Amino acid sequence: MKLSIVIPARNEEHRLPPMLEAYAAYFQEKYGNEAELIVVPNFCEDRTAEVARAFMERFPNLKVLDDPGYVGKGGAVVLGAQAAEGDLIGFVDADGATPPEAFDELAEKISIDGCIIASRWLKESKVSPKQPLSRRVASRCFNLLVRILFGLKLADTQCGAKIFRREVLQQVMRNLGVTNWAFDVDMLFQTKRLGASIREIPTVWNDVAGSKLQVGRISIQMFVAMVRLRMFYSPLRFMIPFISRAIGMLFPYRKR
Image (cartoon, rainbow, N blue to C red; front, side, top):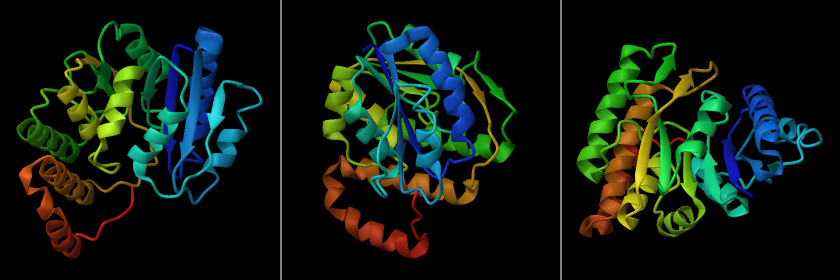
């Protein structure tokens, strides 16, 4: 099988159906049995798994895994990747912000790269509607922090669409340290440490209503996650439990 697409989904009973309809129809028509979709419900409190399974009769290459309880987005991606059969394994957000044609472009352009990622911040990228100033500032500050702490010279580590070569992803997953907010950065950092190439291409990204994330709180949680991750790969690793406890008192952790 050529391509496996993992879709982590938490409480997405409303946004997942149109996304699955578009993706399943597109990839079944273009790839036939050479592509599969794998939905991984994650600690859902709604009908996400049920609405996903409703598509399985029409789309035989759709898998829906059992909900493992809370494992974070990263944990859901790892579980989906472990169930994948493709030579190329990618993941994409369940909200449908990345159209199937834009995701397919990653598969077409991966060439000899170990990993290829979609970017909303390259000159040719098309983002609709234009994001509020607060989100753009938060995104650029976060990107600067990632560049400083991890040396990842990428414009957008957080876009939900990424594809890896199977052999690269298997090595990356063995070395991951986190499955929460820092998951995307950890994956790319491990890819870099392996010496595999990472290519970033412009994408089409359409903001889809329904997100419950709060920019202010999420910005703090992501900043903390980056500092923890950097410490995890440093001699200061032993301090993480103490710092985490102190930070947790100031900013109580909420599951993603």
